[in-house]
Image (cartoon, rainbow, N blue to C red; front, side, top):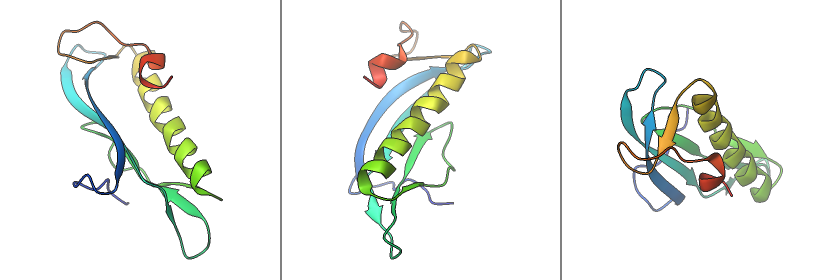
Length: 106
C-alpha cells in the first residue's frame, strides 16, 4: 500500500482533529489529502489517509486528476461518517464539541 508522505511537499491539505472512539477514548488524528498524480497509463491517483486511524488505504484512482481528488475526498468523508455512525465523534480540540461532517467537508 502507498503511504501518505511525511513531508508536506506532496500534501495538498491536512487538518488536525480529535477523534472520540465509540468507547470514549480520544485520539489525535490528521485528515490528509495529497496532490493527484498521473500514472504512465494516463490514469490519475490521489493518496489520502486519516493518520492515527485509517492510514493504509490504496490511492483513489480515476480517469483524471479531478476524479481522483473528489474520490479521495469522498473516501475520507465516508471513513469519518462511519466513525460517527458507530457512536464516535470528531472535534477540533480535546473535550470539544462534536463537529458535523459539513464543518469538515462543506
